[in-house]
Image 1: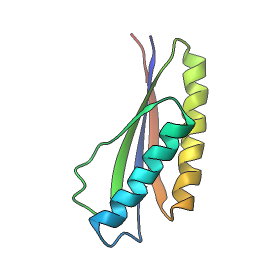
Image 2: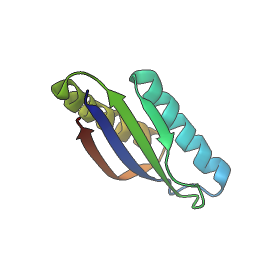
Image 3: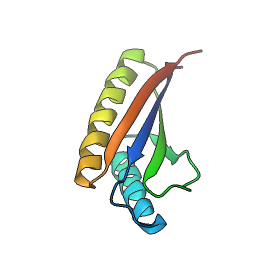
Image 4: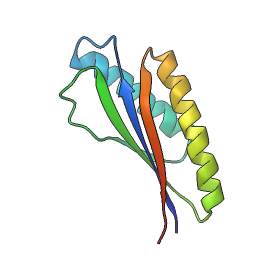
Length: 98
């Protein structure tokens, strides 16, 4: 069964504290989780206030479905980041198969 993995690197230029960073990261995680059936987690330790790395995973029996989902999730993440005054500096996707 294929597993889709998407890693997003986020820059939060306006973050002046850990609270500002957490607000943006939590909002992005909640909105993506609400819109798509996926697992999402913060991958870094949170030592730097203006950057965050998110890991997203989805499972399906179809490679083509996962490819389409990764594209939609990436587009949604860019829209959400822009609405939160953040910027996605890098995102990379991978589909893991057995």
